[in-house]
Image (cartoon, rainbow, N blue to C red; front, side, top):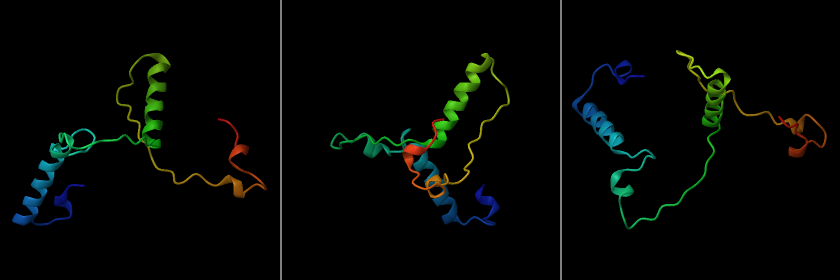
Length: 104
């Protein structure tokens, strides 16, 4: 949503803050670090693996569409939507646990 929808009038301060935020966001590298941190030779960086389930689903579905017939489907937009948490099925069954789940 554009700020003009909920801000009827922009003050000089509002505009300055918005421009400052745009400038800051544009300066970030692809993983979201500002240059003064990303280029600092006195810093150590580590890698933390986090699986983004929504991106995994999107990438898997895109790969399926590309393999299907080899033709690109123009105008097709795949949108990941949140359907809420996975229900705990172990409560529905007696003694059910993670090992009792069917394989997909």
